[in-house]
Length: 357
Figure (tube, one colour):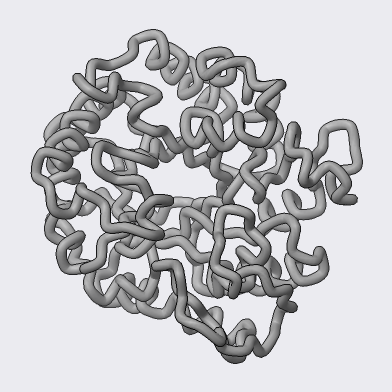
């Protein structure tokens, strides 16, 4: 029987990227543990389910759950994660447990430098040890899917294609029945699916992310210093080439961009699905909330149309905060955006559009 198409949201900023939350509101930040206890609660999961979503993707950074030097589990934090997973499922939502940052790999630092994970066996062993513990802990719950690694940023996609197997079998050894999610290289680019090979297992979803073109979706983003990303751009649009060399490893995309080219940008993932008869899903997509509203909505409408027409599941980035949030609280930069001008600071228009996608 064919499973229901995945329709969900990411819960980033809760057990992951906590430093980004603190950076935006240092005076109001209560400390890591109290932040995890209070950032999201049962009413959030109920809201997500009632909107029409059927799952959430829950990113975790390993250093929030394990001691960085010994990789000893922090039981106090794991008890909070246990509680979170239980409450999410009680709201009738499945969960993708996503290892967002692991020993030797940080997707954000990967924008500028190669990560040790791809060259250092010790870093990969650390990541396997982390997954062995989590997989064994949550193996008894078939509503929990396990995602190897968020946005691998290797220089060579053929290297990722080999080392992904180490992580995969570390999970499968301890969690024989859970669905496992495998992403493509270069920040889960759909283009890299032509260098991805399936594992010998039929309980797997293959994942890509789409913020294409990044020069549109991330225009004005404070965390990207390259001046090419500071230019305001419409959607659709014809974007001029940069006048100087790029200072980032991110794709510097230019030229004419519209729905047809956006569709073409995910074709390798769709070809992979057709070739191997395996499921694929888009586990992150979105537009920086400071982008002009009419263009943000236009890109979102086009991309949701593409996913629906291709019958591809998805997880929107992000439910709360981190500059893409359906909810924005404690982000002073976004205080005056009209979509958040309500007591819940909820962009209900965008949430409804995505839930119905």
